[in-house]
Length: 167
Ligand code: CU
Image 1 (cartoon, rainbow, N blue to C red):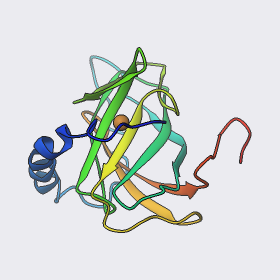
Image 2: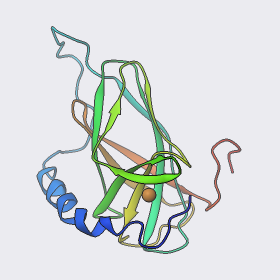
Image 3: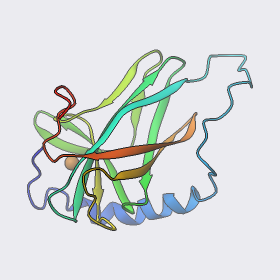
């Protein structure tokens, strides 16, 4: 993934919004998935599973990327924000025609998947609290409109890690 200097200038502007959002989410609790025992009369709720999360070890302590896959075996949901101890400025980006674009949310289709993968959608962690080293695990909270908060442990891999080859 290549990021030109200045291509994330907009992060400064959204920082305040992210901070505000983090404040309202402070009471979210442990991040356990909500119980599915409360059945919905109208439509099935989402059933989310997050797999394959990783962060390539960043070369600097200013910015890092993150990837994962959300698999949904239920109804549609929306990924609305991401927070982490590593950064107060976690943003979600899509890559369209080779240019990245910040997104406020990502749809999680019913009975489908939402993929954050190298060269495509990615998380950007700015203003890191420290430089993550390979082997470390970064705690990341994914906030969904219906499923609430899903906390994942994102292992830090080598800078050139490729999930397809496993190294
Ligand atoms: Cu980006």
